[in-house]
Image (cartoon, rainbow, N blue to C red):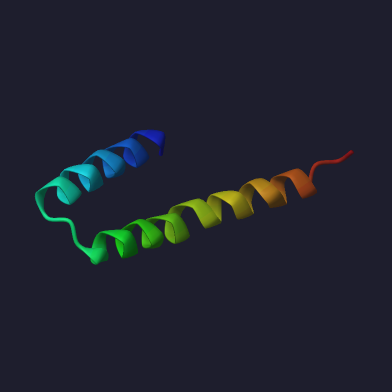
Length: 52
């Protein structure tokens, strides 16, 4: 996952160098929503379900 994230960041930077447009920001937001949010949810639930 980290590798894909890095790849995405590199690809994004290359794209922004080529043609900077507002849809790139949207792309980053989409990426954050689709990839980070479920991860945070998983982490949160895992922490909550740990027997303390």
